[in-house]
Length: 281
Length: 281
Image (cartoon, rainbow over the protein chains, first blue to last red):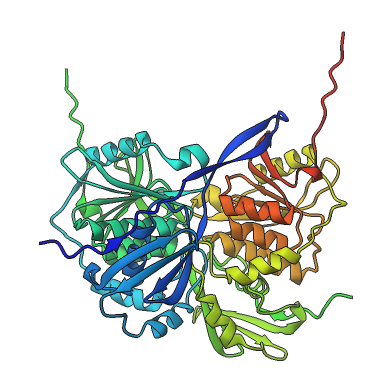
C-alpha cells in the first residue's frame, strides 16, 4: 500500500518570459528568458528558507528539499504543501511537527557557496552508511538510448537557456525511458524536485539512472546516493570531491556523456560495454 | 594613499588533478578534473561557514566573501587572512571585531539554493540605493576585443571543465585588457574572489567590464552592481529576476556574448554600436 499522499496545490509558473533584446545586427528581438521566482518556505508557520526557482513543480521541489535536507524521513510526515504565488510562499503542514527544527536550521548556516546549503559534515557521515545495489548493470546500449532520449526531449534550455536539467530514467536491456525531466534555475532545485516526485509517486531509485546536464560536484553525487540511485550520468565534467565521494560510495559515474561519447569514472563493475563482433571474411 | 593591506598567506591549491577514466573506445585515459576543497572560515576564532572552492586564490575569495556578505565595510577592518590547508581552514582576524556577527549569520539561513547564501531582502533594499556611473560608454569594438581576449585566455575550463570563470577587464576605446580572470567550482566564489582582489589592489570598478561564463541570475547582477561595475557581460543567458534587477539598477547587461554575437538586454544607453559606412560606388 502506498503511503498517504500529502494534500498539495498544483501551482506551476509560466516557465519562460519574453524580454526585448538588441542583437549584433541592431535588431530588436523578443528574447525568451527563464523564469526565476523567490519561494519562501514556512514549515508549520515558521519561516525556514527562501528558494529561487523556475517554478515548474514547486510542490515536488519543496517535498524534495525537505527530504534531501533530512528534515523529514518519510513522506507520511507531510500533511499538506500549499503554494501561493500571490505571496511567493509555500506553507508546509506536518502531521506531528519537526523535532529540533530551529537547531537543524541553525546548523545549516555552516555550509554555503554555490551548490551547497546542506550540512556537509553530517552528510559525509551518512554517505559512509549508504549501500547501493550491486546486482544491477548498465549496458552501453542503454546509456546511448538515454542520451538519445535526452537529446530529443523538448526543454526550457533549448528555448531560453540559463537552466539546469535533471532526469530520472529507466534502465532496461538496451532501452531507457525518461520518467521525469525537471529543469530549474538552480541545479539543486532540479535534483530536489526529482526527489520529491519520487516520494509522491513511490518510485524506487535503486535500479534507475539519474541524468544531469550539470557538473558532478560533491553534493550532486551525495544526493544521487541518498536516493539509492546506482547510475549517475552527466553531460558535463566533474570536480575532485565529486570524484572522491563517488569512489567512496561506489556509484557508477559517467561524465562528458553526449551522443556516442562518454567517460566512465567510478563504479566500473556495473557497466557493461558492448563488444563489437567483426566478421572475418 | 592606499588602505593598510591585511597580512595574508598565499596558499593556492593545485587546480587540476588526474583520475583514470574509460572512454567509449574502452581506453583507460588520465583525465584532468577540477580541484574542489572545503575551506572553513573562522572570523576571530568563531566558525562561520564552509566554502567549497577550487582554491586558486583563497585569501581573495574570503575577503570578497566578507565584502559581498556585508560582514565588513572596508578592507581596513581586516587585519589578517591565514589559510591552512592542513586543516582546510582559514582564520580571519579583524581589527575590532564584527558587531552582531551571530545575528548576521543567523539571518543568512533565510536564503539558500544554488547561487544563494546571501540575505535577499536586505540586498534588494540596498540595490535601490545603488547609482552606477552614467558618464561611461561601452563601444561594440571594445566588447569584441574583450570576447577575443577571453577566447584566447588559458583556462582550467578548457583543461578540465566543471568550473565557472569571471573576469574583470578594462574598457578602453576599442580595446579591453583582462585585469584578472578567476575560475572556481562555484560561480559565486569566482565573483567573490574578484571582489576581494579589487579591494586588495584598490581597483575602482566604476568604469570596468565584468565578464562571466555563467548565467546572469539575480545574485550575479546584484554583486556586479554592488561593486559599482556598470557593464556586465556573459557568454550564457539570463533569468527573469536577473533581468528585473538589471532593469532596476540600470546596469548595461549583455548576454549570449560569443565571438561577434551578443544580445543587449538592459542599460542600452551606455552601449555604442559601431556604424558601418558603406562606400557607394
